[in-house]
Amino acid sequence: MHIVLAANPETEQPWVTDAVADLVRQTGASVAVVAVDELEVEHLAPMPRSVYAERAERSVAAATARLAAAGIEATRTVLPGRPAEQIIRFAGEQSADLIVVGSSVRPVITQRLLGSVPLTLIEKAGRPVLVVTRPVSG
View 1 (cartoon, one colour):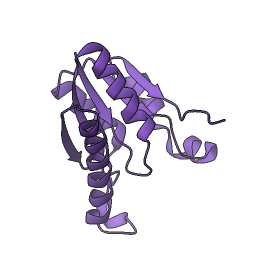
View 2 (tube, one colour):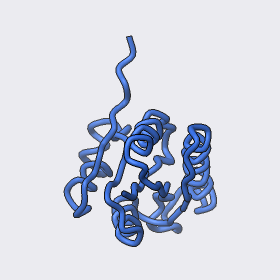
View 3 (cartoon, helix red, strand yellow):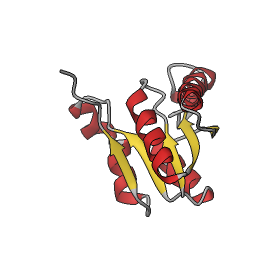
């Protein structure tokens, strides 16, 4: 089994990485961590691509470090462009059996206007997608 973990450059979601670690321990799967810089057209962006790429790099580094701390090796990749499209393409190239992603962190109105990466993955990935929600504390 091969898992693609889609890391979110907008926010840390360690519970998603922990869920992947649990799956790996149960199945012996391999893992590829990917983050997408979320920049479609650089000349329309408020910041240079390097800022977006740096955020994506930090998210894959944090996820792979957390997996390594759990004794799990993972590859890491940062891609440019639209997240859902790039994650789907990457999962295809990796022959992934499963894509794991955190639930959307965008406010509902923003999701309505800009879309939701997890929902788009579920609709268009053509392979199983596991959406991990933030654990309820208390």
